[in-house]
Image (cartoon, rainbow, N blue to C red):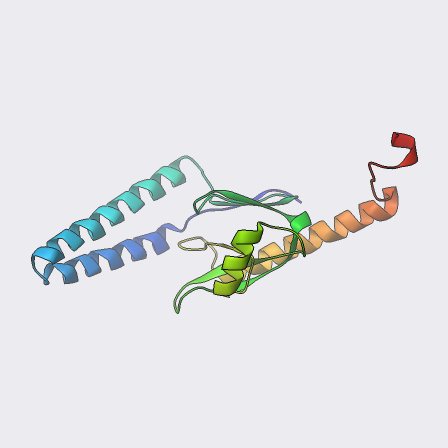
Length: 173
């Protein structure tokens, strides 16, 4: 399997920025407090645009699917998920309008504190944000599940061919 890079969508980002501008104009109607909110909305939109253009120009991809797992740098902190630790991917409905890709870990894998908090909120051990990506959450989830299935098939075939590696094997003592 080759590396798959998923970039931000400029059109989705511009739509999001336009929404912040409209929200900022609405805040302007509110008076002095509205002016402060307006500065935050427009300042946030401008910063978001700057980082988006910077990422596009440098060919930075927020989601990278490798043969061994997934790297997500579109959230803080940046995270890497190994296919060895993952049971399946699914859709996590975070808010009414926000869907993210949920990561269901195999038993005993993943960060226990984070797993417990996330499972209570989303039903998954972890999530991968999909805001303003070229793919929506459903498409990305399908791609990740296909990559996971391909990894499991390849890994299973390698185990059948070469056996399972054990550091306690007699020839390694």
